[in-house]
Image (cartoon, rainbow, N blue to C red):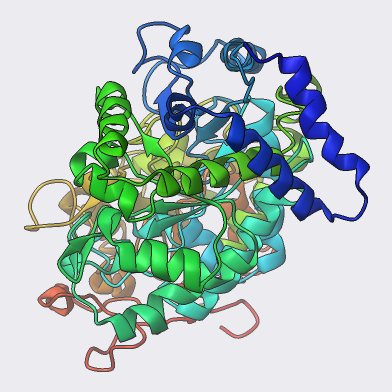
Length: 598
């Protein structure tokens, strides 16, 4: 058995030659380590599993030579942040006990803060950040997300999503920054730079640009559907954010579930290997999405250029045995395996994991800190888009006597945060550390504030009604809008439409706050209301909305998507967007009122 001490000495010895720069030193270390590896060890590095499943026991980390562990839907790693760190430390120790002692990557979907951990700071989803058009803010948000992810034991996040949505029916519109390619590219760069910083810094994590490519441009907005754009359109509209990501040295790229030119993206060698890796010069890790290996052709996935496999839900043995047999039968070349493993090792060296494989416990006190929440509240304020403000209804005067707040979204941090919040599909309950919109309103006024959850109280003597309506949380395909039936629709539910009608019919001055992961067809509700705000999915700091309603801050947000006028706008493959001049939106991309220019 090769001594771990010897290996460490061997790899660190490269430092003595000052002729090489840091990148070259890392390449030397990668090449040296690769020559020592068996095929089983290489395939192990290409394997990613969950910390609570996919293995018979923790010992599988060592015996099956696992390269990466993820936390996703399922049991938490521990009761608190220290428990999470200790759980991952235990698994890391298993990896370090192997012949070569190669450390693990720990990944998580921290898509709007460390959104899997109770008490973390939860930021507006990307659609709201896109509305800010503030790249400095987005970078700061990403820096905080990275720190809180590290504090809970992670060194890798599966974000940002840099899709360019073509249809509001797609269930992941809110994960993307904008329908605008230029804005998306700027936000992608800022987010990646914030997450990664100096990768060896204990405050940063490796970022993942996803999903490559065409995920948001499928026909009729179907998650994992077919993207029928021409390659010219793909190159002009969808590739620029990835070029920006590669230029920002993004550590990983995740393959998409959709098909393009009739081929699943997981097996699209022309785009993954030839375009992304060769033409664009991406030198990081290409990873599958969930069960991407068994779902999309197995050997074809690896030959297309995928380097790491989410070997989940029974896929671990299928992947490891299948790939080993494929190499033996010349179905996958050893050169392809070596390329994949080099990319994985390269990122582990860049992260400094061979020297510092464990998270610092001192970071735990930063989780959900006041400074972080202040920054999240700023993000909420700047994300709000004022679509209407008739007769200067807003800001609300401090002289006002009675305010009615309506709607379950007004007093529920889970509803205001959307999917990927504490759970994959989000939560419909309040969660630790969050402030609701109602909390914020009460804190900002001396008026009598009454909460009329379902507009049944007949408080028509109010000076103003603040009606908070919107979508309930969803993620991925569960958010797709298909036949117009059920919970997902292009319009507000009849119940929420009724909330607005109840108070406007009585002549009460009405402010509507829309909580949604996409623009909705709300033409009638906008016409009925005195003021209308697109608040997107603000996250844990609901009081940021109240700060703008009462004039402590002005509106800054601009629409990251064109706003549809009617459901008929969605009869064809795509929704309303800035490059399609055949459909006239109710509000154009970039629209947004302020108190100064109302």
